[in-house]
Length: 238
Image (cartoon, rainbow, N blue to C red; front, side):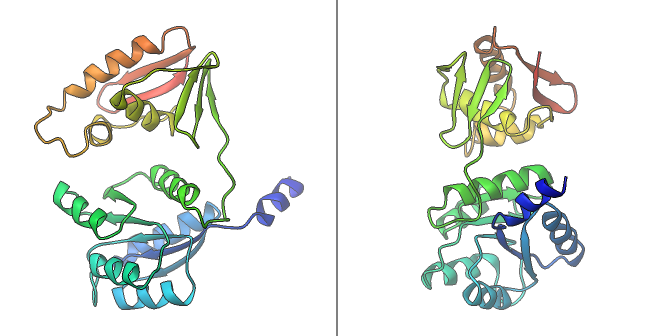
């Protein structure tokens, strides 16, 4: 156990700048992410966030939009204008498509509306870090194996019995969302956001069609795509 701990502590830790003005949430996230091996610097307002970002550039920034002094979009615009390139995940209760577009256009790399699942937040932060070319804090994530299904997190490709599994973009988005947390339910609403982003004319029931088609493609893989009534869907070994 001690040897394993030593190996973990010798690995560079993700340096995270957390900008959140809600004190209880900030303290909760700071403790939870620190327990997951991240070096967290937290602050509650826009000017302080810019000062910390410039003084000690982080690997990743978690940025709330509703901030005193400068709001999150202004912080992001100032940071990008100053050449601060750390990937940014916007974390906010303002979850409309328009807000997402504004954030992404201002230079954000990802967007997670409140309320959110802590496991998903961690997974998104580590994914941002892997995609950022200047980061040295995280090694490449290993492939995920479930039954005869293998998911390569780096390429985003799924393999069935060693062969690439042919998927439509929507099927791939659904399987990636479920494959990120095997054995854990993901709500239908969250899956709909990931599979049909920015498509307000699509009915929520459309996710059921994608699930049906994906189940057929997962036949003979030893993987079950389960429906949990009232909770959503999950992947598990059959």
